[in-house]
Image (cartoon, rainbow, N blue to C red):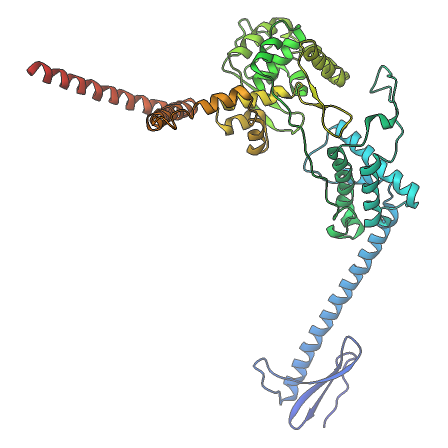
Length: 486
């Protein structure tokens, strides 16, 4: 057996029974011997080849060891980073850190203010009950206890605060118990806000989604009271003798389906083709192009005759102003609740009930307000055969199911008219009525197709109509000639 001193860490190559072996130390500091083989599996019997194969093998092992050392270093660094995050993310600053993360939608200032209050109610509960300070200390038991508490007793922080900036005239506050327990909708919002804060900060804490303290808490089932639409009689009453402000709000609202904030802050420049010094303003056939305040969706709303007539008159009142309704814009931007209260006050003055008592709740549920105009727009559009995708694009709904929900209103009169179409089931007139209904459906589909068709398509349809008329005239002439010959 021939031995030769090798470089440190390069093992020892030796020969036994005509075959070369490599003896080396593994990563876990154990001595190991292996037969040196070629790539095809044959045993190596030449010393020079054995040295080469041994060196290649040990170099690969060394690289693997370096890679593992690097991974261990990164793991340790990640652990230190997580530990630092756990020590620095306190309950007090968690909400602001979560808001700094990328969101799919940017919340409004009002939504942000309410959500922040929900979170700090949870923080107050944790500090008072468990003396917790950092986010990683919160466990599932703490979250479950808090949700159970607010479901049974209402929010934890029961103090009613007053902010002079948001409320110019101070009202006489009643105690917290006056409003009764929180609704299921509000309770679910408390829960979703708290859950969202943990969801955004989980990666910084080194936790998985399932480790969110609120992950396994099921939200309450909702039984919401659907918003009602204005009946045709109520709409006639609304537009009988309104004030200039109410006429503007309700006219634009019913003709566009826009929300109160979008109607109040609608600008002249958002009307297609508008210029500040029009001699003969004509808005009929133009479109309102607006980025909605709530969903940030761009909507294109055609201006029909009624709205065009109102805008024509309003142009001489505020055409040089930035907003179409300057008074409404000022109220909404400076005192948002005042504008909404004026709308409700106007409806009350007409005898229109805007609230309904709900079983099990002390507070009445709002069922008719300015937002009902949005439902009216979708409902009456559906009743008049406007296609669902068209309505969706006008009102800016993110899904067709939402538009379909807005179109689902049906009062007694609408149901009676619908059932009236079922006559003939017992008198044998079903077939003739079905044929008439099918003919009406075809006519309706043709009209809808023509309304949205391109100019080229209209030209082709015109040629087809001319050809059909010519064939009809030829048929009539042939019949008359046959009668004269007889």
